[in-house]
Length: 254
Image (cartoon, helix red, strand yellow):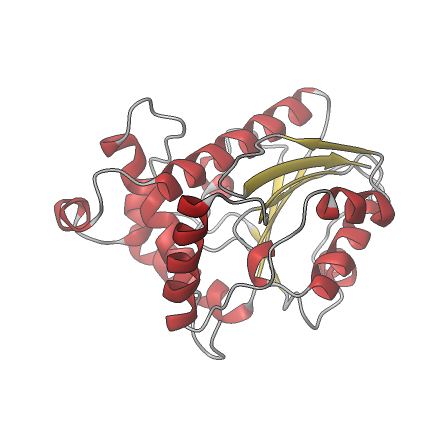
């Protein structure tokens, strides 16, 4: 992202979450706060988006899988959730559990913008906000400074972020997460195993995000992410959504 500006791709992901339950069937994920936090005219947005979008379905599905993981972990006793690269995510504001603490980690410029959006929408800013640049900062230290308990289990939701980070930043982040006992992480990443149609969609996406200053990094070869997760300290790695389009959702636990 460009220094001093909020994430443009965070805005686009929120648009996908907002319009999915209106335009797509079946509905995979419903975020009733997506339109309010965007603060846009609903009809104008609906008129401006494609009636069908594989990316929109992928965004909806990755959130469904992540929140199912969080719900199952809560039932087992987990009381901490960390949304990494939160953007305009609304997990914290839809949270029905008074004893579940939600931390939002993001670049400070994007966090400032989000808090403006929340205020304008009249949504209470109930998350614990942790300002972090994944490429520069020590994630574990910053979380601890804001009250995160590294001795207790947590679910880490890391969606729509890995494709924009260096290998070094991804590895450092995963090693930090793996130090938390009982940690679970759900992340998505781009893979290299794309057919011709998938390759063309990936090229168009890369051009769009590069135009707003958020360039994609190199996609991950088959098995590369799983190997990194294992080296980082995660004992179990599960592919939740391997697809021929090269879009993956992975869950790992320490």
